[in-house]
Image (cartoon, rainbow, N blue to C red; front, side, top):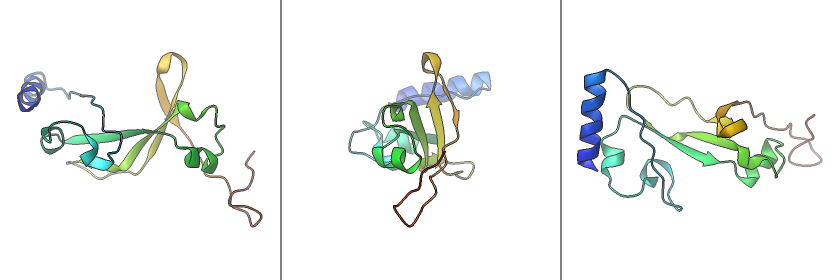
Length: 121
């Protein structure tokens, strides 16, 4: 993995471009340490983001139909590694036609005294 990252860094330097490298995480992992395999993936990169499916609790919180929550992906800002900047918190994406991810605006339902969350129209 060290050699792969070294080659990708050389390509980026020679072409003056950024390279995005995707990788999966362990099922039980969270945060920067969730990457599977070599620790080189976390130690030697400059920027890492964690993408997560919308949980059942988040779907309730944001009033998203349970049958549609699979379309929402969270960029987990607190679990990301950013060497040259600050985390901007969580961001939401929504899967649209042909699997394209677009920025989504999810707003928590208004809390009421009757229940934890009120109905949002």
